Length: 396
Image 1 (spheres, one colour):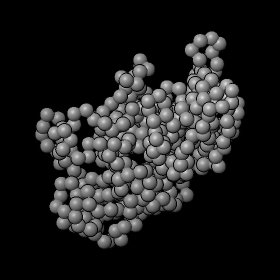
Image 2: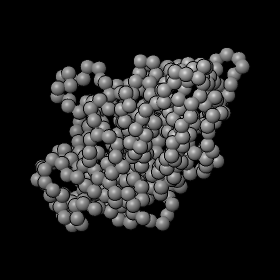
Image 3: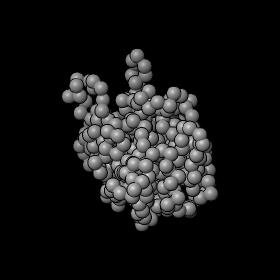
Image 4: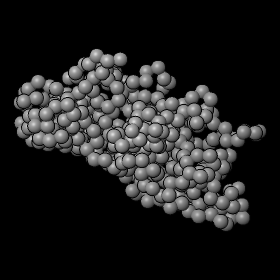
């Protein structure tokens, strides 16, 4: 339900909204919610036809997964008696509040949900319904959920020490890999993508510059260590001109590794991560590392940046508005804002998309709002699941 008001353009005021139940690092129990736009569709995914227009937010989760979301009484009395129901309890059930029990009063109320354990491989959509006055009262707001069959993905991390040509000067990158991977798993769980991380491998290699991988040297790294039927993730001190690279099997074969002849073609699809690049440093910040790694995995799954431009210049793609910056796949998604209203004093959440102030967003979009853009710009959950479902031969 939405209230329409006349204005310069149509405005919609909702009595209720939902957001992440916990602000901070990605957590599998506290998913992000695609609340962009209105009357948008979710594309076809794993044999489930494209949805009709969805009036409200959309969220994904995996079979049997238990999650929490926060309900906010935005434009309704904080003492209003509200009840939560599911349109299909075989797809998703309400864990808390108990069945038939009204929501707690106040501005905020945490709702716990659990994905079903149905037999079908196709995803199941269902509505989380907010009802007014009684458990069978009128529905005043809906959250659409998609419950996914898990898709297993294997990851092989490589910790790479880069020495100079004489075999000295290199230092192994330091990263709390377990904590980083835990957050990466949480970011992708909303799509039902289950990451299985293998024990890390470490090796040292002599290249042109200690602690730095040049673009033309990528094949040297593959030669040292590469494992079939998994996503090989190479972690090193520094990459040439980037903090990360992600190459899908669809795109890697056409990428040249040097500008001059002879052109060297890339040997394998993979993901590369540098702890720094020029003046950019992660300082071993767990969420920054996790966000970048999850982003590069998105490229491995064929996703593009949502704002890529024809001139191949990231300076022209950068955005500071909320819509673009919600995306995990935005290629310059820091949360710095130029001249926020009232200097930000009356816009307390101008830097926070549910992950903490000054941290980047991690939304993998469900809705397809930007319908005129190229493949992979929006409706990204569907793009990824449809790609993975084609099997290891296409994926790896």
